[in-house]
Length: 343
Image (cartoon, one colour):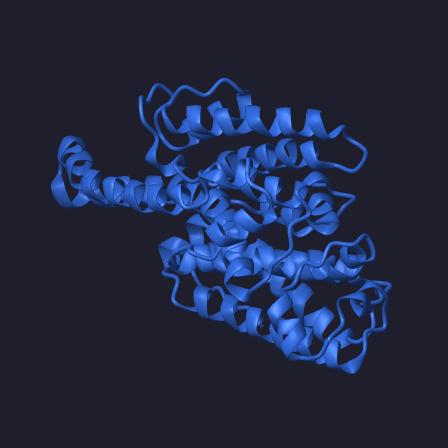
């Protein structure tokens, strides 16, 4: 959790973080939504920072849960959620179905506040997918809106007919998000065991949400040792048990080879998952989602570095910052002309 909090909070040129470069190279229609989502995530995660009174943390999370629900109804009060609604097309909308899953940011923060562990892989996957539904789906909707509107107008010749054609898709998306969110509603008030049961019933997500889930898990793995040192195991306990890896062995690097092999295999899986989910993106998607692709590519690069360094922690190279900046620029350039590739 510590690594994810740091990644979410520090988004500036000095940080050289994946989020910073995602914002730097985001497409024009993508940037307002990305800035708003990063801002909301920072505000929510600030509620679970170390040292904050537990009652204050719960009060803040409850307010943000209500705010996310208000946003989905078009009645947002916070400037960040209002900005997000505007980025989605209509600041006066009475319903914003693209934000039906926004409470997922609060759900995962509440899970973290309860110091809940992941008993099974399904629970960990559902945690990451819940985050992805909250962060990635609104971003996709906002970024692709101009292209979708242009395409609809070209096909139907009138804005009215384009809006009518788009309505069924938005309704279906809202239903799916609502079903996913309903299974997780009680995470805010339940303790770890109840939350784990709910998370285990999560539904699979589409390709872009799978991409977001991979980004989320790589961030968890990047902070695995530090979180384990603080008593939080951010890995599936059933997989650790099957591999005969003691949880306390994760708190200190270098890890035993059994643990290193398990994590190495997971990192390779996540890199392949990112590769699969971006490989089929169209020219229009690459151009509209340039920031997301930069974010995904830098996450892929982080996983690669970790994989190569295990069982030790990756040691920052003298020119890593420069190399990352150059890598992010090349990825953005490729996406801008519809020729995105990771290497």
